[in-house]
Image (cartoon, rainbow, N blue to C red):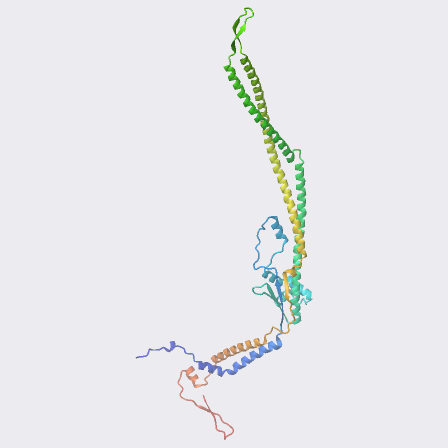
Length: 450
């Protein structure tokens, strides 16, 4: 079976590991020298040139903190909520405390406190020396200060902690002082409004026809109306009785004859004769009917009078009711304003007292606690000599090896029979030994292949 034709141009390039090893062996001195120079340079820099850097560490515990910043919303609960939001301190997050630790104001206080050279130490340069981080899943803040002077590093760390607590207390004092001043001003203004409202209420109540007078008058009129209505009811009952009596007497009178036959003794003749005479029953009933009709007319007149009085009283009560309702609404409005202002004054007074108490509290010592103060470090943290030398060794070795392969690539001289085949693409027919002459004729000559 014939083998497939292979084009040398597309032949797969095979990596010869022995060739690489030969290159490394050929340039081993360059590699060793480059690595040695790199290690020596790193050692000189680490031991003699780079200044040692010491690190002092202090730990702070934040007592009052939340995970997320509270978003401001319209205060709930009316005036109490509004005044409460003014008179209380905001709840800060851990990131807020962390940001305050590296604020320019605080760093300048540390510089002034320690009397550091302003040409060497500024808030920016001091901030570069300080590293503050929050310990994961805790309310702890780890503060680290690096400086070439171990004593100064510890002093800066401890002064930073103390000044931070003092700064928080001062800011608390400033905010609470402003809140107290604001609450006092509002209380004084509200008390003036309350005085005006009380005077307006008293003036309204002192009117000739005030609510109290109208209420008394309305009460009296209501009692009079109730009395007249009772009389009217009784008069109505009596009127019905009289009307029934008149009707009965009228019926009785209608059924009673006016004249009756009466037997009398005639004085002239001495005989008993029958004559027509007025019926005494008719006369009696007629007289009773007249009396009843007179009583009925009188009672009707009384009922009409009572109805007139009742209607008049009802109309007057309606007028009083309308007047009383209107003035009562005005009085209730004035009284409500007085009550509201009184409540406002009481709330402002209470919050002023609470804010004054809060102002007297040292918030720096209550919200942040120094768990551990910084001690003077005994060993520098920079430079890391062993690590620097190890990194320099690795980098020097890699750089020297890369340089060896570059030199090998640039070297196109022929030194071995393999170079002839590689560069000239010609077969090697043989080698000519190189004979070196020596002054000592007893020593045999050595040869070299080229």
